[in-house]
Length: 370
Image 1 (cartoon, rainbow, N blue to C red):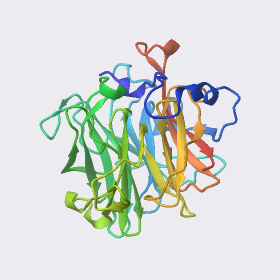
Image 2: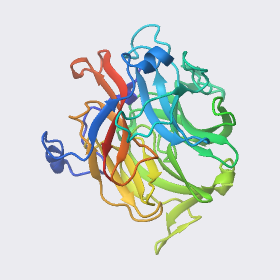
Image 3: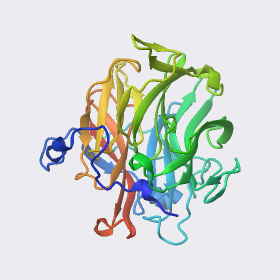
């Protein structure tokens, strides 16, 4: 198993900030918007002693049907790094917490999905694990994109990617997905992968592979980009919350040459070289978006008055010199405009050599402002 998806090598490219601006953005000592609060996973923490969650990927927070928070992790191990033998590879895994991220001690996990008390946290859905998956195609692993829940029914949905390979590809892509799919759970523990899929194309150019989802009233808004942190567009769709399993119910947000409107072919709302996106509606009604700008290596945020409104320019929240090897930056749904909590993933190697074992693979909590 190669894991080149995790590595970010500092390449400047794509449609992000101009290369001439990058040195100033990355200059140590420049004022930062977010500060490190605590590390949430690792071999030395109770996530390992209680649930055997040591080195892990992502940490995407979403509101569960009971009002607490679920945290979705991708490739997860009981060792600090994936290369260690007998590392108990699982994905996706979910830990849970009712603790507010703004508490002095930050996020504290209190349970794991599919576990009564303490014990090994298993993966919450089927994973092909370097084999033929449930769809008859080769599947390296299954990586969660985002989660959403519906108190009216008690159902939860997880968007995920079926990963075909971790090989570099066109437009600086770091990996290729087979498709994006939806899985559901009616008990909060066991998730079942549905037949509904958004298939990638042979050129790895489909822009509906990495999702983030946010409900607002009767609609769920879906922002998506290509797999692999590559150059490309960000798209926006919406779907009635009760119809997420019906592809014909998804409406694109598009430009017709004169104006923007719904129920049209999708038009890019942003272009760049995007990492995994995260969008949340804050308590005051502001919409906040975060992602890794792969041109600068920074976790950045934007805000808007609504999902289909104009987004602000990028605000840098976390610099790569603060958290070397960072990639994901996921907005906690209990964030406010003055207390924006980000779950930031990290992956680093000995001596910055991607051919050497990784020395850190974990998630940290940062807090900034919108």
